[in-house]
Amino acid sequence: MRRSQPLVYATLLLAIAFSAFPLYWLFVVATRSNDVVGDWPPPLLPGGNFGDNLGRLFDADEANFLTGMVNSAIASVTVTVAVVFFSTLAGFAFAKLKFRGRGALLFVILATMMIPVQMGIIPLYMIMVELGWQNRLEAVIVPFLVSAFGVFLMRQYAERAVPDELIEAARVDGASTFRIYWTVVLPALRPGAAVLGLFTFMGTWNEFLWPLAVLEADNPTVQFSLSQLSTTYYTDYTLMFTGALVAIVPLTFVFIAFGKQIIGGIMEGAVKA
Image (cartoon, rainbow, N blue to C red):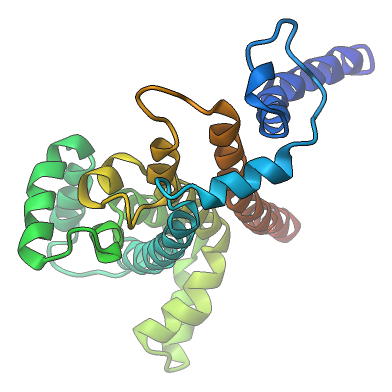
């Protein structure tokens, strides 16, 4: 083990360097002006133009970047809370409750995961037109409030994380099914729910194709706004890199918050074991 430690640390440091360098380069370009983007060798130290680039980013009328950030935050938080709630509730039902047609219903839910998302864009867009939700935030929230993957993930997690004896003890004490879910099952599913919440928030925040189809430039999400920063005749790389840097800040905070929950749940399980 002692002989292998230097190699292990060297490999980890190399992996960290390769992973962190694109983010660092993103920050460097965001603090520079466009005249140094094509320089060789490229600049490796931050410049002093980040404030100017940030001001130009939020003043760009064609991007509506602030609106995009607010819309993405509302959509991501709403979808994440709904997906975690419905997925843990359905996962608990499929894993621990006995009811007729449970296997067939679970099969139907899993079958929806086999259909590519791109195939559903046209019929889903037609539904949005019938509902009058074009260029409205409801169009990027309501269709994604439930996740088949989330139901499957929570079902598998609940199958192993929640003992049947614990549920039976709660029933003996007179607890209703929803109270058992809220006070017994949901705390046990916290690590899995944190993972699902992290993936859901990141997926919703980074979604581009569907907002591009159903929204317009005056009411975009953040990824839609970033696409508007690039024009046909000229690309302002510092503006695009500044927008990308600002767009990943909420993801960083969410990852840190959910990461603590994940690690805490793993350590809690290890102590109990």
